[in-house]
Image (cartoon, rainbow, N blue to C red; front, top):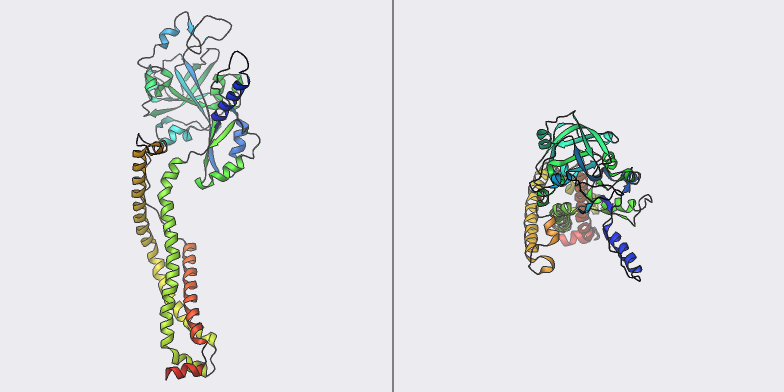
Length: 440
């Protein structure tokens, strides 16, 4: 679950503000604004139920001081920054001394609470190769993780110190290299023009360091927070509880459930579960009917025996109990066989059903990709593109617990009781004389 700025509401608010001020000759254009969230508010959400862990993100750019970043092939910012005229925030030439001079950054600073659960590390794109990862205990410390290529080019190792500066060169921070990671991220096309977009120039720091680079206004804030659920089924419950936390301005921020991949992967399993549940219902009903028919046939063949027993004063309830005990003796043997074989049978049948459901899901996905949005056949659908590379679950690890056995035994006893009771009532309601007469 990602807590971040609600961009849609932000743009809608700016649009309303622009419309209300449109009476004048000038209209205010909508702008992209960054709204940080207080760390204290994110921590309150982290204490809610169903949260297995969380991470905080504060991202910015910086300048390398005393070491060289990995230069992008088409990046000319280093040449332009050495000239007497520096570029402003939007790239325009500026000699105005009344506002900070800005230089295009050459480092991407990723401030986190825990680097091990950061997006690229969880995805396997980035991997720690030496040193230590950044953890919550490093908050407030000036430590850094740098990429292996950047370290090799500058002959840096764990324990060395580097300096980085804010883009206006007003803030300089000295950092101790705590870890070195390796990335297999190829980067975007824009990385060839801007060094700070080069994956090798991404450095990981505690979010407090990133806030220092940003300035005093960013103290004790983050750009976003990600919460890991103990179970995807609890997403709705967490979201409902989170909405009651008044420390978060829900008119500004929103929670997004990034569960599209989970839903695609769990879909075939849910179908198998639904099918299996229907099979249980069908087998239970059919089993009761079939077993009841067999018991009825057996009772009809034993009418004379029942007539004699009733004639000598045997109670009807004992006769019914006798039939029930006979069925339960057979049932106990059946339960024993089922207890031994159920795990293996369920494993084989479950995997076969899952394979069929995966094949059906793949066909539906391919059909969706061909139709595209709205079924017009002009390209892949947006939803399908998000999960196109998702690996499907190809096998199930089925475990049959003691609770499952008890449920199965309860269902079996219930079926046996019903199958004996109904036929017995039809026969035992007759008096002994009638039974013996019909037998003769």
